Length: 369
Image 1: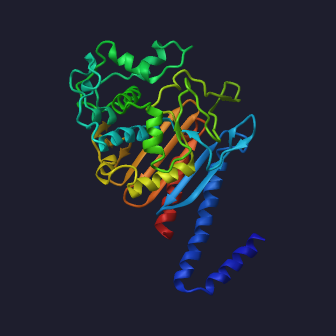
Image 2 (image 1 turned 90 degrees about the vertical axis):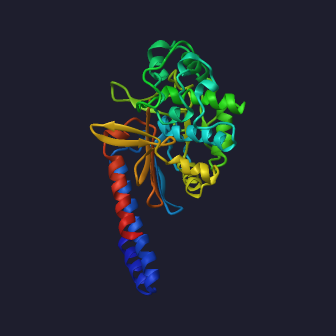
Image 3 (image 1 turned 180 degrees about the horizontal axis):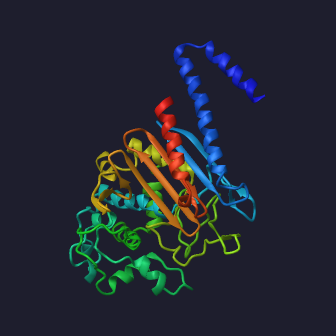
């Protein structure tokens, strides 16, 4: 039956004009791409295991939007493009956008000192808002400290992070001197947003970033004050016996900013469109998002960080990893292509899913678009 359909398609294409032939040829190649992607993901994800959601968007069109595996193992509910999945550090781009929204409103400047908002000892040396966002604050990482210092029988929240930075001098290096990836500082940023906006952070993000971007079902999730997440994917890791175990109850899951966002392929696609069309913020502020503002050097190789994104001349990307969560997003800046993979398991970076998916998609775009 499948061969008959292909033959009929070829006959149909032969009766069309040259431009119509190109369109039909592309559709056949797209089907081949989708088949290759399915084969790749199914080779790593069993149908009864926690899995992944995939978005491939090109030129304003969702080329691929689908799920693999289950979002809920107990109830055998599948992952779909509507499934809301935990983003891990991909959340940082949305946290940065809350600050840029305040910049747009003239309520804050990226060059403002943190001390002007929270006059505590550790920020006396002039750490700026921009240095918080681009990981050059020079401050210690509160999240790292909380793994050993915090009472794990209690859910930690952002107010506790602010309290930690307010107790003594947490400075390690001079502000702006060195790039040092810092989750704890991103968990301080929500307190700044709340202080300046006089609104609760998750609500501010919902009203001024997510809804503005058309992300109607996307939210920051605080375990200490849980809300209902529609079609939620629970997070899983394998235990010592090889069984998948739910790991959604970690005591740091009340911290927002470095992580905490739940979104879906459908919502992330809307967000991608909003970024490309520059509809979330003013055009001037949008132009800041992917502009490098700090540099990291590893083994002599330079990499750059912008407003919640790692950037090169042609791409902006970010990965995320947390308990039972792996995520990866990549936006090409030299072509209208975006790839996003969201997993409710911690195996994305233990195989070549990211590299192979990117390779398959880029090859398709190169040859048939």
